[in-house]
Amino acid sequence: MRILLLTQSFNSLAQRLFVELEERGHAVSVELDINDAVTREAVELFDPDVVLAPLLTRPIPEALWRTRRCLIVHPGILGDRGPSALDWALLEGRSEWGVTVLQAEARLDAGPVWASIPCAVRADTKSSVYRREITAAAVRAVLEALGRIESGDFQPRRADPADPAVSGRERPVCRLADRRIDWLVDDTETVLRKIRSADGFPGVADELFGRRVRLFDAHPAVGLGGAAGSMLARCDGALARATRDGAIWIGHVREEGTGAGGGMAGLKLPAERVFQTESAALAAAPGYAPIRYEEDGPVGVLRFELYNGALSTQRCQQLRSAYARCLERPTRVLVLAGGSDYWSTGIHLGLIEAADSPADESWRNINAIDDLTRDIILTSDRWVIAALRGGAGAGGVFLALAADEVWAVPGVVLNPHYKDMGNLYGSEYWTYLLPRRVGAQGAQRLMQRRLPMGVAEARRLGLVDRLLPLEASGALTAIGAAAGALAADPSLERRIAAKGLRREADERAKPLEAYRSEELARMERNFYGFDPSYHVARYNFIYKVAKSRTPLHLARHRAVPAGTDCDPANRETRHV
Image (cartoon, rainbow, N blue to C red):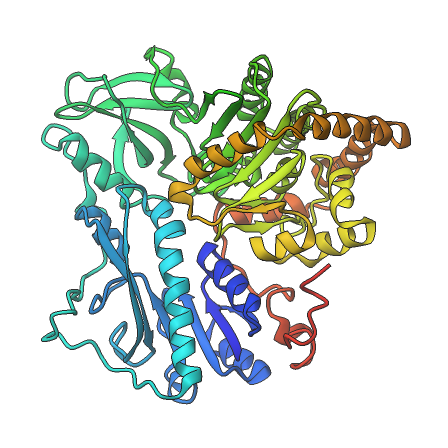
């Protein structure tokens, strides 16, 4: 089928659907929802069988849904209506939710239902539940709906409130007031639900140290307590605040402000970073631990749960120190597990934007991540595995390729390129690591195409070595078992010795630092040169400036005539 993804942004769900649909042979193009005239033009150019809307904040034009089959992916159970479906589900502590695919009509979320898939949801942040449970259910629902369309023997029906299976209802927008915290009354569970239901947008409105902020990234602060509402401690960027019956860690905050050249105002940053002076008076306490190490016999597992996957200069340095300590342990296999939502997305654009000199902080950050990448490449006495339980983008992909093997769970999406960030050249030794896997020409094509890929395609290309047949929720146990089996394999010693010989040969052919020097020479021009594209793109990304047009690598209907690159029979742009 020819499917046009009409979406407000090319977010995690839109990318996953793009990958899954292309993998199944559909011809897919993307149009960002900019205005009605642009949408009509996109439909005329691409002539889709289905317009699929995974993320919209306004209705599809009536002239379009009356003449084309338009499907809305609604993150709610059967019968649910309204723009805050998942917000309400998490705020109310629901453990079961779902995704419904409806045909667009005049009444929002009230059209005939093509598919509805239930799913269990964790007590976690909205952004995490959306990326994992909701996205997985959405993929199943969309594929079921498309299968029913193709079969021609399914008649969609509106959700009937009298039907016992229809448990949803129309709900209004979830307002800031609905999530306001009363620190004297609310217990820890209630506070966590309120903050998690608003993460990563819009956050919970509150005050810290007399300044108006939005709260994000909340976790229980086990063992801490004090006068309700009081600030208790600091730990690794987070601040602890007392609830009625305990305390929580607040990992990130966004200070209220316009964000237009106003320093840190409008930026979502580590709480301790925003309140540097105030937090200095708080006692340091353990508990908020983004970097953790576990060991089971010959297998070590280094986890790094990074908020949105970003590796700041400081995090790179901390992770590098933790990695060095891992190498002091008597293990044979070291697993770099990353986080359950993201493995890594590369340098921390938010902290770079907040710096006095974004160019200088960009330079510090890229060198810090290069140092970490080099340490992994040069590890010669054990086998290193990058285990991707969540997505990876830009420098995070190449940081993973520094390991000896890359494992990935189903549903992971990779973005192995930098160019969307203002034609950034990239470093992390990608000019050494990528050609080793896909060849020199393949590496250049891959870096130019600027499209996401799923793990199946990454496996075919050689970017992923092993596919793990499980979802992220149970990945750590299975990863540990697989790593244990590898550690017990008698051939492992030969493999470790062979990689050492290969590294020596590679060094003789071209020193590792030569790759880094060449990459950083290009990056220096990105950061300090006359072309401001990187700085403009970073600003637009951080402040969520709406795009004025759909990039041509996504809007294939605008770049080429229909039936060429958009045709699944011609996959040259999708495969190296």
